[in-house]
Image (cartoon, rainbow over all chains, first blue to last red; front, side, top):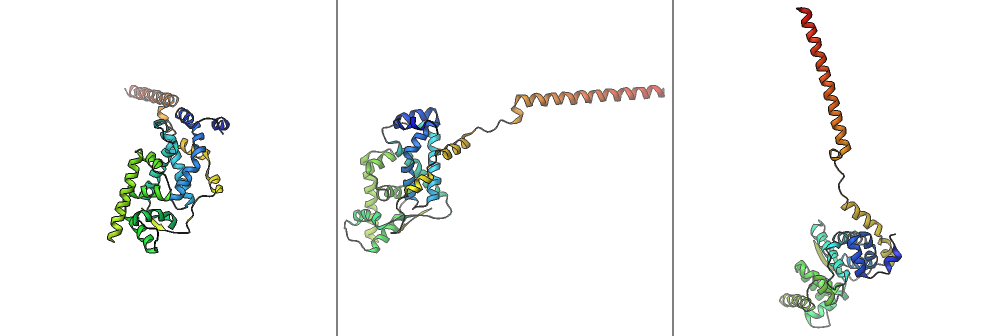
Length: 187
Length: 83
């Protein structure tokens, strides 16, 4: 492929500059970020291999088309890709006639349960109730819960994805936890 | 629409083999080229094709004019013979 050895020696910002002029240089960015994007979508789509592959392809095609408009604001390039991947997944959820199931395991949910109930001992009903509450959240809020608890992302990474400050990301997540706490207490 | 579900047997991470299987930049590049390729130029905007159409038109016009002229001459001869 296109000067593969040469691409390996270039830094990410150098590759971005070159890819803006010639999309063949995008291969270097693809090679470095494919796994991260594929893993993200694979987790989000509960291990649906084909769908994860399809959305990963769409994400990189969109990124290739938009690379000229990409501005380096000091965030990792992968966060920009995750933002595109998240939009692609949300578009799929909205357009799909079938319901797309996102699976959480008990271990994924446990940190969120500890925050909501401020305890460490839980029964099966607690898990079921929390999943029920998550299903009632608006999409923008459930997306944040997914990033923090399903993908175990740091507040810094979440802040970079949403292009907000770390404090703002923390505040948004804690507001959702507070909301879940209130609904959980009343039900 | 999306729906959350609790499943303790869910697949957690893709295997290295799955990652290797789907990592293919040439397919992405090909699909990108296909999506961004300029539409084919319509035939009438091709200068060579345009000149060909003009030439064919001129030939048809000349043939038509020539046949009209011949018919007119034949008609004139007939009327002269009657007189």
